[in-house]
Length: 141
Image 1 (cartoon, rainbow, N blue to C red):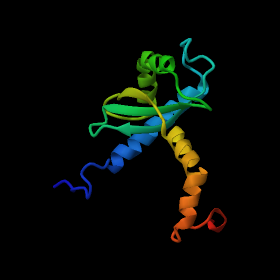
Image 2 (cartoon, rainbow, N blue to C red):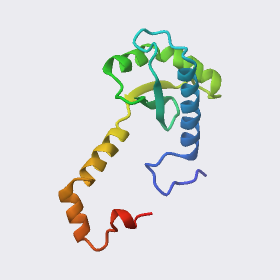
Image 3 (cartoon, one colour):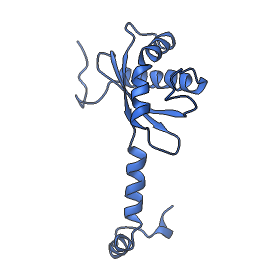
Image 4 (tube, helix red, strand yellow):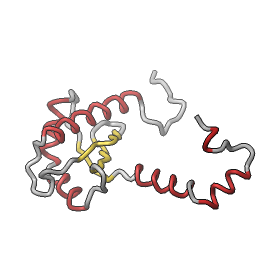
């Protein structure tokens, strides 16, 4: 009998492990600079996260560029070279099926920077100092 997960929507350990292996395989291809596409030449693309579907046939790959957002042209180029990337991943990660990869721009860092900027605004700092349950900047470790 199959084990029931405490959180049915959460990814299984296998999904997490395979997604991490795919992330490493993609990162190695990007690091070697093996992509022959004019929109990707000389670009530094980082794979920040990969999420696997329950059947492991689809991978959502979150990508970022060093110091800037991934452009729509770069996302289109990644879609164009997806068959090549799929072959490289299939060689590096032993799965029954080579997963289809879908690329999305990772906006988590941009969002974190925006929240940090809001938290540093004087009116927010004033509200935080008025709350005795929130430590001051100097009290944080």
